[in-house]
Length: 182
Image (cartoon, rainbow, N blue to C red):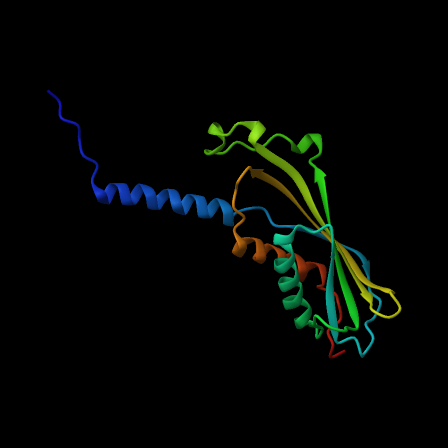
């Protein structure tokens, strides 16, 4: 009679740890957000020192992340975030687009074999960004951030990698924005 082998705790811990690392790496290895600057370079007024944020059609969970990451980047340019009266308004509009036909085929990975295609939501998330003078409404800067998403129902969005990608996208978008010292 063959007795079943016992799995040692060390081996089980190793397997669980390896799976956790693979899942974290998969989340952290998502492609970056693509960006574009649509309108550039009205020189900021010397008194443009503050901005507030307005959202249009933005999912609630994205609002604090986008606001915080934009505030970090614009702070580096000499423009501070405020919730009160401000010199400029940073308006961010969310646009949910279905993926183009040529992007619907999901690349095969070791986890996709058990996922039914009907349980995966595939879309392009676009955030249109406009920085306007609060008084004149003159456009000072604008751009877009776009990312293709393959989201399984009930999936959790990991804040840290998402915030990092958003901040990098804002840095690219505002790379040529003049700093307050100029």
